[in-house]
Image (cartoon, rainbow, N blue to C red):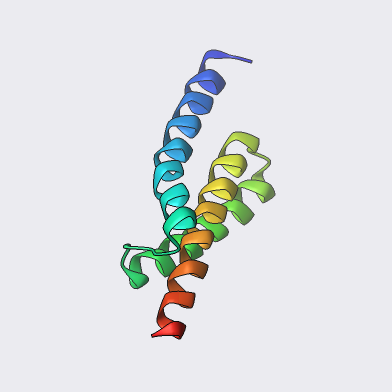
Length: 86
C-alpha cells in the first residue's frame, strides 16, 4: 500500500465513521431527524459513486461510497417508516 492509498483509506474511515453515531441513534430510537430530501440525494449520490468506483476499479472509493450508501439507506428506511406511521 502506497502513501496515497493510506491517505485515501484514512479519509474513507473518517467519513464512514461520521455516519456511525447517526445511524446507531436512528436504529436505537427508530426515528431519523435528518431532512428527507437530504437523505434521498445522499443515497442516490453514494449509490452512483459506488457504481462509478466499481467501474474504474478504485476499491477504497468503492468501499467508502458503498458504506455511506448503506448507512444513509438505513436512515432513509427509518424516515419512510416514520412518515408512513403518521
